[in-house]
Image 1: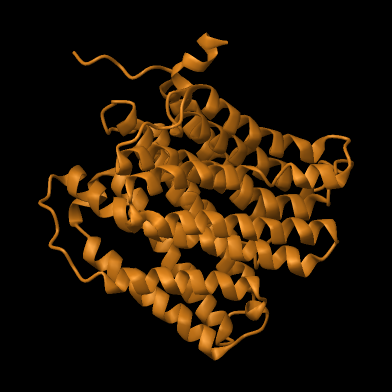
Image 2 (image 1 turned 60 degrees about the vertical axis):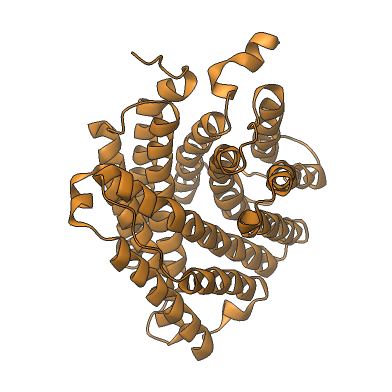
Length: 387
């Protein structure tokens, strides 16, 4: 038992959760696409396939990656030891049990209850270290993890009571919370990665107000989804999304450096973040009556933004934290391109052809499959000894 707790994959949070999250990303989307095209007619998880897909992409896939990143970043921010060994194994098993129980012949209430412990446990681990170290500037991140837990309760209650509207509100609020969290984390690490990757001098400090406004507006947007205010077009909500889009664009303009286009670990992050701009302006267009389907904005965020940022981030973080050179293989560079094209296919082709969804799913699965192909060995093995 001691040997299991000491294996490298359980030495820090990013290792097991990046592996599990990437594997689940490919598997879950493959299952969803096969079911949509009638290739899995007899399979039904608790609540049905739509409820499962709605819940598992934010609360299964995205949350696993968020956990891996924060369980690695918070020790760096606080100087306290990160979760490892059996406590980390236990947290991984809680996440894994929640994924498996959807498909087991147990009472629906038990299946849904099994989903609940993970996010509160994660918040407890992170909060303990942040509070002990007095890192109040990171409390908003902790708040967003706790709000995600609230969105999950709303979603699961909607599944349990067969309330499709409540399910949808909870899931969309969670998705936009994940987008807000990505904008906070991206605002910290993307400029740093550009600076390090291009050997540039540190940028001059700018006013913190745009970042604060972006954070508050992102949280407020998530709240409006939870309350159902996004169910019908509204000009004042269109103005909110225009404000968010302008702030995201201002960031992209400030971060831009021609050198990023020569470095795959940088352009992948930059283009994925640009999908956040597409998503918020698409929402503004929907509220202004200029776009027929709100789901196009939703999937701009989910596929291009969240999917693209996650793949780029886990590729960069995995290399950096295992002591490898920051030089991704050609396969993972192809994965960066594939997930971005998956976003384009989901948004631009689906309104005109049913094949667009299948193509998007195939490209998504291929992108995360390439990550697993190239990074499984890296994440399982110990950090190489310096020469």
